[in-house]
Each structure stands twice: as C-alpha cells, then as structure tokens.
Image (tube, rainbow, N blue to C red; front, side):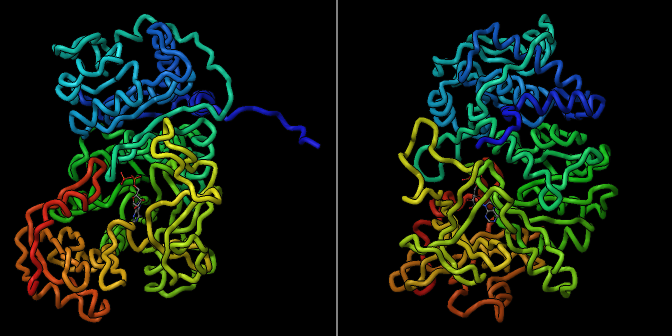
Length: 542
Ligand code: ADP
C-alpha cells in the first residue's frame, strides 16, 4: 500500500521561492569585484533569477544544457545558481585557478554553451575563449560601464542581458533526480572528473547541513560564505541559506585576513565556514593587530585536517565554537561534523578538546564504515584504521560521462581515498589520505599527525610532511616548515618537540625550512607539488 501524501518533487527553485515569500526583506550582501558593497534582499534575488532564466531561454539554453561560471562569491553568482538549475539546466562552477589547458579541457568536457565570468577573470578567459569552440557566449558579470574591452567572441554583459527581461517566469517542475550542478574534482591523480549533483541530492544535503549539530543555521543568523562557490557549491551554504532565510554575506575575491575581518565585523556575521589555510591568515592578522570578534560565534573548518593548535586558538583566544568537518566533492560535500553529545557535557576540558579534534559524526543520510584491503568492515573501536567508504542520497554513484568507470565497491559503497577510524559513538578520525600516508617498513605513519604536532610549536606557521624514498624503509617522513615571521627555530629544536608525543620511529628523518608551501586551487596544501619538488631529496645517511 502506498502512502497518501503529496508527491511534490524537491526542486532547487522552491528554495528561492520560499525565501522570497517568507524572508523577502532579509539581506544578501556582496563585496563586489567592481568595488562597492552591494546590498539587496531575497526578494530582489528571486526577481533577478527569474529575469536571468528568461534571458537564458532567449539565448537558447535548454534542459540539461551546461552553463559555466568563473566567479567569486557574490550576488550574481547566487542568481546563476538559482536561474540555471531552476530552469532545468546545469550550472557548472569552474575553478578559476586552473591552468589554461585544464580550463579548455573542463569547458570542453562539460560542453558548456555559455560561460559567465567575473571581471577578475577577463584575462584568464581571453586566451582560451577561441579554443572553446562549443561556447556560444561569454558573459562578463558586470554592468555596461564596466564591460571589458577584450577580444572575446560572443561577449555579452550580465546587466544588459537581464535588463530588458520581465520576471514573469514560472519555475518548471520536473523529476527531482534531474541534474542541477556540475563540479570537477581537482584531479590530483589523472584528469579531473565531473561530479553531477541533482535537485534531490542538493535539497537533502541542504536540510542536513542546517541542523543544529551541523551548521546550526537559522533565520536570525548572519552567515559569511568564505568557501568559494566554485568549491563544491560553497559547501552547500547558498542553498541552506535560502532554506532557513538567514542573512547571507559574500566576500567576493578578497579572502585575506584584513578583508575578512572587516566584513565579519561590518555585517555582524555570527557563522562561517573555511579551510584551515584561510583561518591561518585570519588568525595571524588578528593576532598581529590584537583584534577580537564582536559577533562571530561559530565556524566550521574542513577540506583539510584542522590542526589542534588552530582549534585551541579559535576557541580559547577568540571564543568561537569550532566544528571540525569532513567531506569531499563526491559527497556534496559534507559527510561528518563534530558536535559533542549530551553525555560529553561532564567530560573534563582536555577530553572534550581531544574529542573536538576528530572529524565528527556522519550527518543522518550518510552511512560510513572503515574497511581493510579486502573490503571487510573493521570494528568501530576508534583504533582500527582502514579505508573509509560511504553511501547515501547525496553521495556520487557515477562520474559525469561515466569517467573512470564504476567507482563503487561491489556492494555499492564509494571509497573516499581517506584512511581513518570510527569510534563506538560514530566519530570519524581521518589519519591520512591513502596517497599521503607514509609507508615505512610495512607500517603506516600519519602525515596529518606529524603536521599537527609541528604547527603546535609556537615558532611554526605551517607544516607539511611527505614520504621520501628510502633504501631500507621504503619511505621515511620529511618535515617541511614555514616559520613564523622573525622566529628563531632550528631543526634540532623542532625534532626535540616531538619527544614523548609520538613513537620514536615516527620521527621525521629531516626538516627543511621554506618561505612558503604550495597550495591547491581550493587552499589546501598541495602534497603533489611538494612530492614533485622534493623527489630527488637525499635524506641524511642515505
Ligand atoms: P580535492 O581536495 O581533491 O580538491 P575535495 O575538495 O573534494 O577534493 O577534498 C576531499 C578530501 O579532502 C577528502 O577526501 C579528504 O582527504 C580531505 N579532507 C576534507 N576534510 C578533511 C578533514 N577535516 N580532515 C582531513 N582531511 C579532510
């Protein structure tokens, strides 16, 4: 017997329509590329998204067509999210820090028909535009006054495009499993692969990340989206914000410590999310200038392991509630978030702190287990480390165009490429990426754990550990460090800092001091680049 409830499909357009009806005057604030801060409301965003949907139809965009974006977090990008998906097409957010060849490859693979770009990326677009023959129009996301003078075929300007359109547009209703957005993984191994989200997966994910033990979003929050909208849909915030009706603040391209601090204070931001590198710069800026937050209460940190020293500083010095989270593009992206349970209330401060270092519990909707090399499930004892595999309604089943074949295990789970443990309370702790773990004498050394200890040293700003070939042990750890400005630190002093914190055989074989470490386009340490840079490195005694 079937249930007798309505079969209303979960549509992305229903989010913006809801926000317009119930939160019409709630603000969306954007720092723009052109300069001034732009302010409007959910009502305005809904009107302009419908104008844009009409304009796109006029340009010949049909169901399932891909529309690319090369843009920072801002109100026009937000409108594109809703207009493109809402009309039944697919918004393809492109990472603007890609190289020329990668850009041409991704635009071609996605078969983008139109690409929208922020003025910052005019030069980036100018070169590949001619090579991207499938793209009919390139649209500069600006007004006529700022329209770039560039040799780009089919160049249009965003404000001109929507100016003549009415907002008389009814969002169509269709199957909720229809594709809504496309995002390529960074392709650290092999070619980038497209992850294709659906309306249904996006809405379920948006519900889950709004819950109190996740982002805890509400109509009374002011939320700053630091994570770029080209990095897995800003971790889903642009959707969840419309779902709950919170004030939304977009930082544009200014992600340095000073700009972020000023924006947080000016817009009374109380909640944000960012990768550790962004927080590192913001903390440095605030410490150098002896600043404090007056409204910020909460941050989610993920995308890479958050060092314990950072969680300590943010909670003890800046009074923030830090929630460590884990996920990946293939998971829309949120898989786990760390929030304590009722039974943890009585725990001594240090035990609570230790718990907060883990990557957290799976959100309802994500199933997770750790397995050995034969795929056998390992105990949930917080000790048995294995490959983390996941399943759920917002987890990838196949890559776009079936790239790479079937990524799932025979019993239908997605291997994440991460190694970790799960404890009896369901908390996941990532020990490493399987390709970053250091394989020494048949045993594994966690690069994350060695990095976390190094950045706990007061003279260390940032640290990375990679495995270097070793004739006897196969691989041994090399520690690469950026000192804090003016710090006086020797290799011996840093290695002595590890004493008593790890097994002796985990101690890095050598330390190299560098001025800066390479980062990926999404702000994570690029171990791939480091491995390339240090591929001929000679460890002492080898
Ligand atoms: P990429 O880094 O390849 O661009 P993603 O942004 O999808 O792709 O990153 C997903 C990966 O980032 C995860 O598989 C994991 O290795 C790493 N990651 C994300 N969050 C955390 C975390 N809190 N701790 C450790 N690693 C993390």
